[in-house]
Image (cartoon, rainbow, N blue to C red; front, side, top):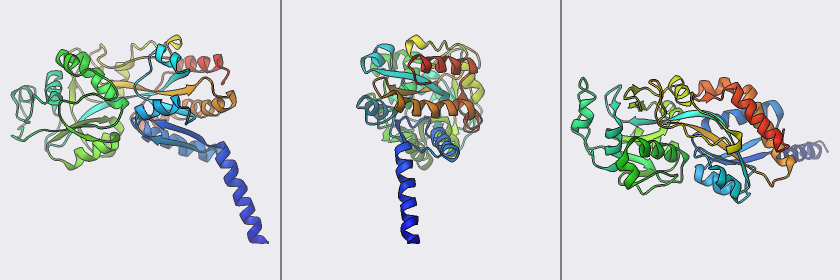
Length: 330
């Protein structure tokens, strides 16, 4: 009898948990943060948030197909795209895509021309004159460069190639930008984690990953030339500088691109990450999702900073809350 009772209690608890679960999928860029938020949210409320880091392309696809409660993408949907698929969109945090490398040197400086040349497959060795020019005190090896890039549809790729399209006319003409592009060179890896693992293992490699993944894997990160010609280290401060001029217009579903921004301290490959919600879902379903992200806005900033993301300014959060209210979700 005791066993049956225990089993009965256990089954009922599982049923409640399943009905209360929130399911999301998408960008790997914010995965370290969303997983930590989800863990703490469940501890506090008992509501589980299942988040699958399948890439921004997968996240957009799943919310368009209405197979998840929310999608996540680092590539913001333009207002007309969001309208077409009946989606609402809002930002959560700001971060940066960094250039990581596996060489026995520190504080490598990379100009826009050098990064463009490497990813176009035109610069193939580490002691190329264009790289040496900006690193006169570093002994660069005569080693082949192994380019690592994403193989999946990725918001991190969108941010990186958007930056390259602005910083490098040749890249814009030959390749362009998007969640997936026709890469001129490189080895493909799945997710930020896959790229980070490759860079860690392959000597002489270079690739682009979200900052938290570079730190977690103890990867070296380059100083990148910005729009003002300054070499900037990736940091919370330089990501904030990149976001300083952002407008965050609710009428445009908060569509905002933070690459190649003006400012001496602005990191040139910054970006926000976004949540997508179906407008035609029941209000009760969307309210559950919104409660989680409102909790994150209220209690998640410290965790975001610890993981090297930039929380949204207070006034932007209030704009988002007004946007939620307008849809009846808050």
